[in-house]
Length: 358
Image: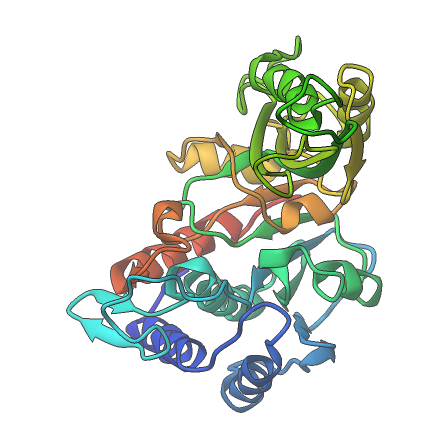
């Protein structure tokens, strides 16, 4: 399937539009408007643009419910710009092969690449249906993102989550669970031997979080990782703290569901433990899946990803995370992607998907 410079040019032009339109999570409305208009005016195939909240999707012509269906997803939203930008984050700046701008790498490059791939796949008969989805609120795993739009989509059998992976297939992804923990004590005067220091009680539990090793290790994702990231205790220097609150970031592997980890944690610490959510579980796609097999045949190397994506919210469906750009550039000052990476992404995705048997 031949990829033309016109495909690359259109992808780059759309990326510039997206960079210049701030689309911080939960504020993607204007970017969704512009993307919708871009597709409606420039699509080389006849397909309607559907919308729910700030999520947009297109279904390839000739949809047949008797065939398997592939979802191509990438997200519109970005994080807030960090300190340290020497360029304007919302001004697309092209310097040779490089495009600078907030969201250029995460996740604009995957979005514009997968849209071009969707167009190319639509123009040739395939044995499967294709859906292109531009989703919102991915960076915050928000309720109005992919979870909200899934009931409105045709059922699909597998999905590619476009994220910057240097076009290598991430076949497993760590899950996330954030815990709010509280150790209770009894206040007293710091000058006397009285009270129960909640901070000291918390330290015992914090040491458990720091040193505990779970028995089930993943070949792709390694161990479950627990990290205490915030702590608050005390009102003033001479009062024994009667409460110590702290936050734990838990990154799960596919060997444990978040609910199971939560029960293990509660049985091992004295602090009260409340999970903000248990829905962001680890995900995994089999090495035997046709998507993975085709990627391996192309010379790609499957790996496990420590970062979270929409994979965690698409339950019961095999998902592969893959896209142009490098994850190390995500959420950084002077974020960028290469035009050559977008070209390479379109070419590799077309090779991966053209003629695929699901």
